[in-house]
Length: 395
Image (cartoon, rainbow, N blue to C red; front, side, top):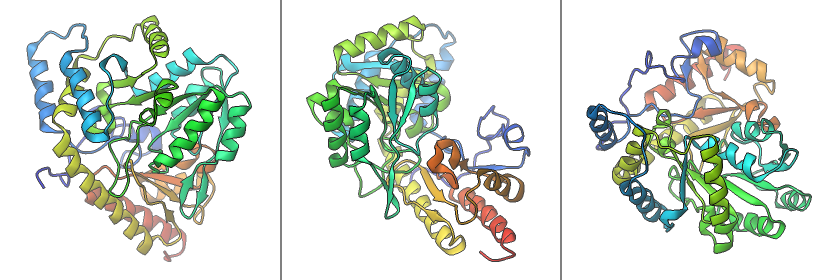
């Protein structure tokens, strides 16, 4: 393998949200953090070199999108996802979550219902509730160890006046990569009842063998016209701190209104380094990503094997995509505070607390796979030992 994903890189002292906030967030500085969704891997060297070259220029003024930027995104989506988009469809945002929030503000009214499918990435709740809208929860159904969509309830909610669906595809934290058939059923319901679908597809490149991400807007012309797709290189290439996302809007009227909203907040200009990193990633990142996916799949399999042997009371979902594993720890405790104490005080490890993803997440933990395998296994061993101590030495 050309890239060394086993290498441990010390991120402490770099203003890392993941590594430098442990004492403030968890009450101790020696926590091993396997929670927030960034990676402990270096991005492709081409990205590092492109950023260095830009930095060496020495003037960091206002920045606009270049033809190279457009070509890189369009080429990436065509190569990796067989989705051919038009340059004019592309808009931007400092990140996917700001784009979601702006979509809610712009295309719904205070008090309107916005559908989400819990357990789900917790900022979905924020962008609905903090904008004065109403969460319409379409809980996912747990069947045979994987999540499925409750289409019957979704139909009722869409018919009941909801205005928008926030679609997490691939799904975080459950790791589902929705099939074409599932997405087509969503599309049928949303088209019938006039819902705008805002698809957070930030994990679209992180899909394991045997599965295929289908961009929602690629399903049909009708889907393209009633949807907005949000992507970013931040998850794929570990660039979250550069704050750059792409928003793909085929519908001209929706695009015009969204761009006007961007300008209202004066966030329509590009990040100097974010634009450069985006272009370099999508132009040169194929080989790096292919090798990353092999490594992440190995981490997934290592975690599943470890849990099966050492934590038999834990049910870990096998993710089809993302670099997260969703673990049912209710046999240990279904009380969030008890799981927090077990993690932070006893084990000295931080996974994401399931309860923040919605009521359905109580008693669950989300583990970040995107780190050197030795680090992942160290975190699992810490947690396993704490569970054994809790059980008087038994697994």
